[in-house]
Length: 400
Ligand code: ATP
Ligand code: MG
Figure: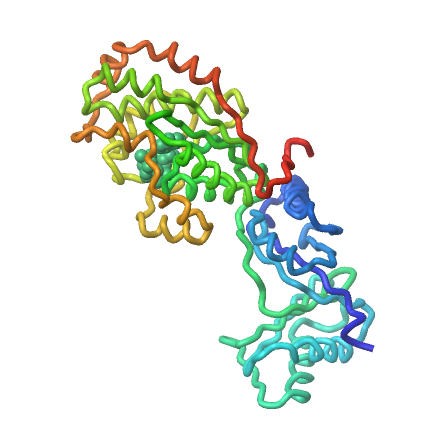
């Protein structure tokens, strides 16, 4: 008997995670939690060891679709599982039975044997299975360098698995394994991409949006909520802080020389962000700044803006070209949301000639002109928290 009786499941490879020697278990437990969270709509059974994670489910296609958003997965594949004790010809027959579904001319067989007790070496297994395919199918040839189809066989401790080709996962580390960070999320193209990149490194994101009603619209805020929803797919869920920035911004506009508007405004944003971050146990700030992109992102500007906070500020896009940032935003499906035309608070109060090399002393002098401590405390007190999940059923990982 072959084919239909075979168990079909999803096998996950960890990639970079496997380099974590001592604390690999912590990472894997987090990955398992995240996979469970992402798949909680589906009926799944998850098992893992230090090399692989396996997901058993009847809804295999939907589950595979969802796994592409889970960080820490290097590769995921639909695999066929067979008993360790079956002989090699049986393996060949089963591979043959499944390989018939694929359209290919050239192929190669790659075998990994982590169970060294298995009586045949990897090369031999590949050779025998390859020969069975050549013998039973017409017009097929072996091409080890650039095949149309790769047949992968893994001989593991308790079972033999095989699969075809291989789907790349997101890579990186499981979300939360690095702790939490606060993303300054505007409605632009850059900040969602910056958030995505930090998430991939294992940072669980909370987001902070500065709004300035009535100068900014409800549509602008909804746009940010929609961006956060996209990020929630990767982040399990997102806590979005909305801070009313109107009074601060108006005070700056009325009192500060206009070439320093943006510099001072951003110093205020940084101050508030750091406090919100500390309150919420976020260890870093993350934003979408990129060297040279605008006047507030020259090296001197970054210096005088950064100096008002002590927390590390991570800028994943610091050295990226805009076109490369756009490419990623298209991949993660935030681009079309980001280019919706609603005004952001930064774009409304832009001076004609923002200073390119702002000076520390001038910033301090100008800031004395406004009672910013009071304004900041008030803004933080009114932190409006919106909880966003990747779908609308209101599940949150903090409840786990
Ligand atoms: P983006 O950089 O996201 O495309 P942008 O270009 O309009 O938006 P910049 O003026 O370049 O934003 O600001 C640099 C960074 O500062 C943003 O990437 C974002 O992290 C943060 N930021 C700007 N405006 C806001 C805001 N209204 N709320 C929260 N963060 C903001
Ligand atoms: Mg930008």
